[in-house]
Image 1 (tube, rainbow, N blue to C red):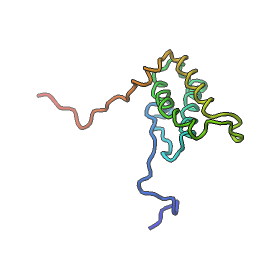
Image 2: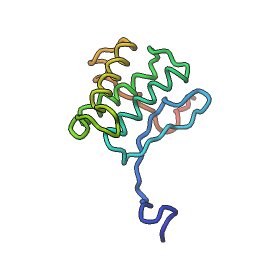
Image 3: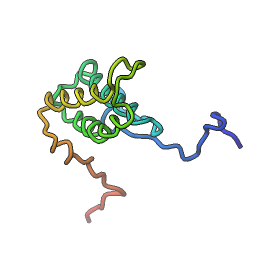
Length: 133
């Protein structure tokens, strides 16, 4: 049985989640497509950081930016492998632009490279809380 997307309908399609990246006015989980290449992932993260600071009212030192910058730092080493030269469509060098955006965001947030390397998501507890008698 074929789904709405024909051949592209995959039952195990995966997504990238950006917990905590939604605006206060929309608390739904922000998702990206796992099929994005490294340039697309970096572009989405840079756009999210800029949008949250410029339009979302987040301060440049807002701790909610840390996971976005850490995610950008994690994907960035792969960008120059495939997008490290001038790109006519992009009208620039994507790898250089993303590196500059990461450094700017890191500096604005007063974070070190080590801060981004050490960042880990908060562990969620599962199940019900135990009740005391």
